[in-house]
Image: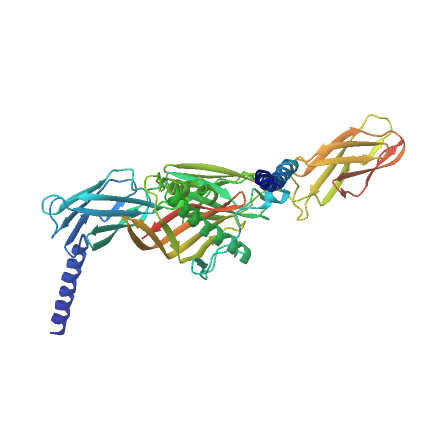
Length: 315
Length: 191
C-alpha cells in the first residue's frame, strides 16, 4: 500500500513537473502571451510572437531586448486578435549570456529571459607572464590563452584545449591540457633543458596560434679552464688548446655565445661559448719555462693553468 | 564747468575706467598666452593615467575571493582594478548620454570594446546608470597583467520608451593591463 502511495505521489509530481516545464515555453502574465525560442546561438535570427488578450488591432506594444550591452527596442503594432511578431535578423543578437525580454502594454509589463549561447572558439591569443625564464627547470611561467567565438564572446569550450610545447633540448613535443575557466585558459609551465626557445602552440579546430618563449641560462658564475697539452718542446711547432667551461650559479652551462677572454702574459684571445664551452687554439710558446693562462667573462676570472716549455722532452 | 563739458568729462572717466579694466585683462591674458608657449609639458604628466577615484561601496566593492591559483593582488592593485572597472561603466554612461565614444577606448578593449561601441547609438541617446557592483576576483596572473572577475547582481537602470527600467545583472569579466591601464577585454552579461 505504501509503495502504491509513493508511486502515485511520484507520478503526480512528475505530471506537475512536466506541466511546469511546458508552461515555461510560453509566458502568460495578465493576458500577455509570449512565444519564442528560449535558447539561441549568438548571431542567430530570433522571432518573438506575442498575443495580448484585451488588445485590439492597431494598438501598439513596446518590446525591448536587453542583450549584453546592446538594447533592441521597438513599438509593434498589433494585428487582429492582438497578435504581433518581432523579428530580429541574424547577426544582430551577438552577445552571449542571459538576455532579458521586456514587453510593455499600457501599464502591464512582462519580463522573460532568453539564453544566448556563445559559439565555438574561432580565435585565440596566447601570452605568458614572462618573455624569458631561467633554463634547466629553474624557471616557470604562466601561459594564458584568451579565446573568443566569431562574435567576440567568451566561447563555450566543451572539449579540452591542448597546449603543444617544444623545449629546446630536443625532447619530443609535449601536449598539455590548458585549464580553462572564467574565460581564461592557463597552464603553469616549467623550463626544461638548456637555453634556447620554447615553442608554444594551440592548434585545434579553427584556432591556430603560437608563441615563443626564451629560456636563458644564468649569468656566468664559474670558469673551469683547461689546457692541452700541458708540456711542449720549444721548437715552435706545437699548438695548444685552451678550453673554458663556463657555468652559472647552479653549475648549468651559460647561454650560447657568451664572450670569453683568454689571457696570458703578453697576449690575449677570444672565444664564445657553445654548450657552455669556449675554446681557443693558439701556437705554443717557445721560450723555455712556464707560462700561465687565465680566462674571464664579465667579472668572473678562472684559476690559472700553466704550460711547461722545455728544450729536453715532456715526460 | 558747462553742462556739455561735464558730460564730456563723464564720458572720459567711464572710458578711462573701461580701458583700465580691458588693459588689465588683456595684459593678464597676454602674459598667460606667452607663458603657455614658453613651457613644455609637465614631465610628471607621462605618469598620470586616469584619476584614481576609488568608487563608493554602494557603487562598486570587492567581495572576499576564493583562494586563487596564483598570487593575490595587493590592496593598491585591487584599488586600481576596481577604479578602472567603475570608470569603464561611467564612460559607457557618458557615451550613451552624449553619443561620444572617444572615452571608451581608455577603459574597454578587444571584443568588449567592440560591444561597447556598437551599443552606442546617436539616434537613441539615453540615461544609463549602474550601481552596486560586487566584484569577486577569480583569477590574477602572477605578472599582475590579467584578471578574471565575477560581478554579481549589479543594477542597471536605463530609460527605454520613456520608462526607467532597472534590471539586475551578473557579469563574467576578463580585464587586462594594457600600457598601464586596466581595461575590460571580455564580458558576458546575464540579466
